[in-house]
Length: 432
Image (cartoon, rainbow, N blue to C red; front, side):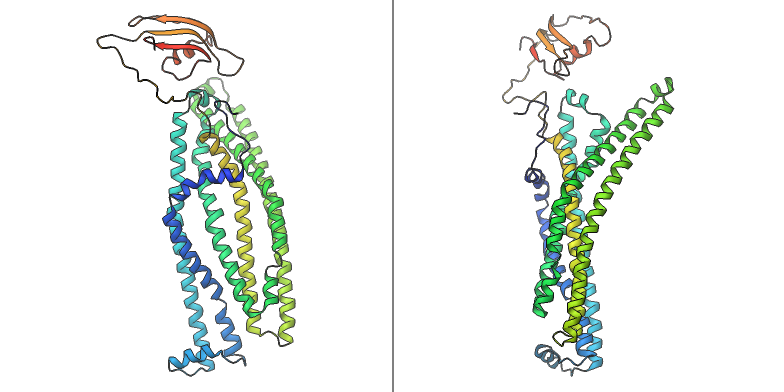
């Protein structure tokens, strides 16, 4: 059971992602356009090395053009020759590059629009939620920390959609299309394209939680620094009055050192993650060159096909690298999601009750009678500020609350507009 003002610290990854999905789903139209453009982009990317094969094998080499290509030239009234094939290879290369650039631009433009709408939808809900949470909650959290959650942690939905949907779909489609086409050229080399996959999967699992932990620690350190700056600048008169400038500067430097340390830890984990992945991909690259070169020498593979495989290896390597970067980013984003959900999932200390009667002021009457009936209240468990207070103030009556600082005068007055609820007893307005 969770009490008021608490959150569940043991959220599963599925729960985190499910809570962010409504913001992503609202942009389904833009995401559908992105998906369509991504499929076309992956197809064009898979075709981009083929003009090189046309040039090396058919224009400069002795390979015979496939029957389909000969028929295509014949249908256009052209006779294939070396010069024509060189020109066609150059034009095809330019057209494929232009298509690839145009499709990539379309994906980027649509993502910018959809992604920013997700971000500000979540930020707006966070802002609205924080306004409705009780003063008890705001008393437990600094303004700087809450500002950090709205301005920085709300980016989690943008990052999640980019690193869980947009980039991975693009990379996976590219890997699948390249692998299928590569299989038609040479099944053995096609399998070698994916030889690093098991190592990459292990690396992602091993480093995932470490990357998430480093990101969370860095975000908390940055929030502490922001909070300290906000508190200092809002109380700058007191800082000057008590000549706290030097001490605050030293404290700021200490908080900055903590941020730097957390950033170094995160960088070390990220770089180690990338080093392991890069090493695995380098082994695959070496195998492609070794086996592919042997097959060219034995006559089982054309030189143009080997060049296509080398180009595909670069494409697969880039796609795998992007996939693993996305995975690392997602694990880091989970820490930001947790900080957002700490606000959205917090049960209000002063909840609105369904079916509550509206307060109606009695006609012709000046003021409202306020009664404190055996009221107790404390900001923290076991530390009461008010204990068993009984007081009645008649409508129109003026009273003064007198006591030392911290005696509970402001707390008692704050119970009337229901900034807080008493832990015991009742507050009545005209007997209600």
